[in-house]
Amino acid sequence: MKGKMIGVLTVITVGAFIATASITLLSHEFFKAFNAQLALFLFIGSIVMTGAYLLKKHITRSSKIIQNLIILFGLIVWVFGGLVVFNILPIRSTFHWLIVGSIAYTLFVELQLLGWGKEQATMPKIMSFIVILTSLFLITYFVAQWRFSGLQFWITLAVFTNIGACILGSFFPTQQKTPNTKLHG
Image 1 (cartoon, rainbow, N blue to C red):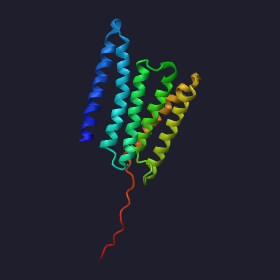
Image 2: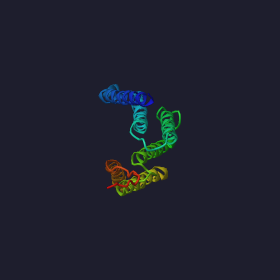
Image 3: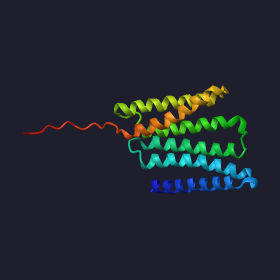
Image 4: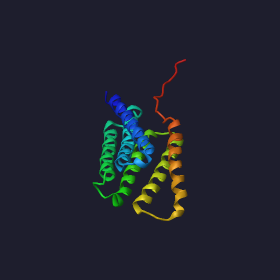
C-alpha cells in the first residue's frame, strides 16, 4: 500500500513540476519569481519522491530500516530545499549544501539499486565504485566551492559517468548463492 501511495505522490510531484516549469517558461514578460521558486521546490521533490519510489518498489535486497533512513534523508533534503529556495535561509550561502545533500541522496539510492554491500558480480561492483568516485568528486567540488573554470568539463564528465555507471550496473544481476544440490543418478 505504501508503495502505491508513494508512486501516486511521485507522479503528482513530477506532473506539478512539469506544469509549473512550463508555466514559468511560457510567461516571458509576466515572469514571477514565485513560479520559479515553486518549480525548483517541486524539482527537488520529484527527485526525492522518485528515489523513494525506487526504494520501495524496485529494491528488495536492502533492509527496510536502510530504505526508511534513506527516504527520511531525502525528506530532510526536500525540506531544506524549501527553506533555501523560498529564501528562508540565505540562498547564497546554503545553495551549495542543498546540491551536496541532493547528490548524497542520489548516491544512496544508486548504491541501493546496484546492490551495494551484497554479494555482487564483478560488473556491479565496478559500477558501484565508479558511482562512488564520481559522486565524491561532485560533493567535494560543491563543498569546496571551487571557481576554476577548467573544471566544467570534469563536472559534466562526472555527471554523465555517474548516470552511465548506474544504468550499466543495474543491467547486471547480483549473484545469489544457491544451495549445492546433489543429483542422484
